[in-house]
Amino acid sequence: MKLYDFSLAPNPRRVRIFLAEKGIEIPMVQVNTREAEQFSDWFQKINPRGTIPVLELDDGTLISESVAICRYFEETQPEPPLMGRDATDRAVVEMWNRRVEIEGIGAVAAVLRNTLPMFEDRAIAGIPSGVPQLPALAERGRGGYGIFLERLDERLGESRFIAGDGFTIADITAFVAIDTALRVEMGVPEARANVRRWQAEVAARPSASA
Ligand SMILES: N[C@@H](CCC(=O)N[C@@H](CS)C(=O)NCC(=O)O)C(=O)O
Image (tube, rainbow, N blue to C red; front, top):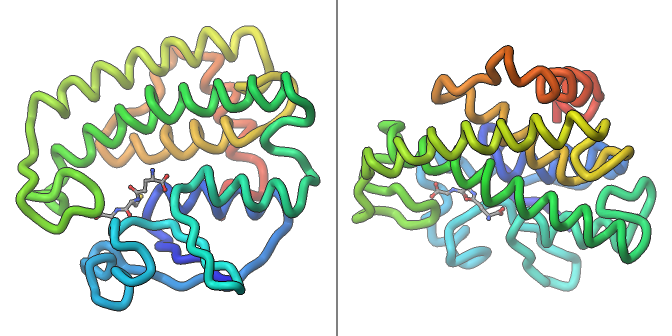
């Protein structure tokens, strides 16, 4: 089994933090997306969509999509649970994780992909060229990120972690989104005190450095 990873990319980091929380260690293969290695012949055979992370199982099964990879490890090593313990819990965790992916990761990605020079002419991940950056999408992403933080702050005013009392994949997704947003100068304003309280707590976990 191995994980196709890149130490500087946010989505693979979600999986690395998840694995660190579970205490799972597996071999990692670096795919340098800053040098277009995702478009190389060898990696296109692993994932023709040109994205990381990808998990390769010993029987050759290839799983891309961060949450699908996390699901595999949750099923094969349930402790500690990071995706909910029972039916209700699992649905609540999934609800929050989806919200964070769509509202948080979606907004941050819109800003990054439509502003950073390294994404010029490739504003969609996995597409080598021909996708221009659109400043209006970046601007809307910035607005969306503000709404995301506002809603997250409200939620974290009522519970310790995003999906409830326990740390879950939803916290990992949000933590990585917020950390990545710093690359485009989008910090967490002081007024979002609940988010800052939660962020400090998550940053103090050993897994945060994964
Ligand atoms: N929804 C996918 C997103 C994967 C994704 O966009 N990965 C980025 C790295 S964070 C990538 O592979 N980018 C390749 C590119 O920029 O062409 C997941 O969660 O796995």
